[in-house]
Image 1 (cartoon, helix red, strand yellow):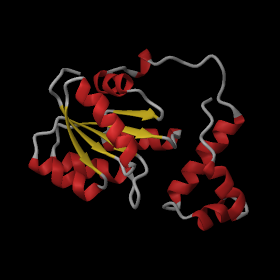
Image 2 (cartoon, helix red, strand yellow):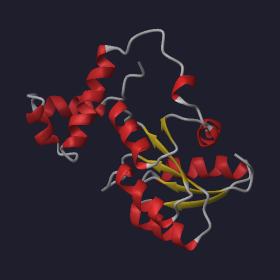
Image 3 (spheres, rainbow, N blue to C red):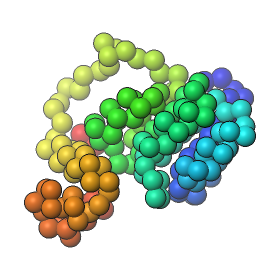
Image 4 (cartoon, one colour):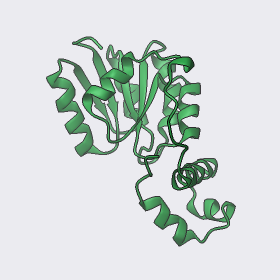
Length: 178
């Protein structure tokens, strides 16, 4: 990504946003910040913005639902979804909705910038040496069912035939890498 690119950061975590903003400014980028979808659309409408980094889980909304809104305001914008709650289903959905790339937190500023430039095709993707662990598959399945139930913990617990408190404990843990 070239310097002087205008980037919109959409994340409800103000501390993380400030840190990411500082790193991107040091690399010569113009940064705009929004902490919710409505502010992001207004910011995009009022500024010439080339790219956006959008958190998957915003306070009251999903970053996935924000992708079409951002593209409606600026069809040429490159969007990278950044999340601490990654799953295969949300990654596929983000790309289908028009995101350029999907990254898991923690990601460095350089990794985020590289995600905007990445143009791999399916044939270029590296196939992992080991199969996905059972814990990771469980995490992804829980995230998919949670997404299917619009974030409703009780409905998700019923769908998984699991006690609500057990589900809440599992959701408080960080996702397993592999």
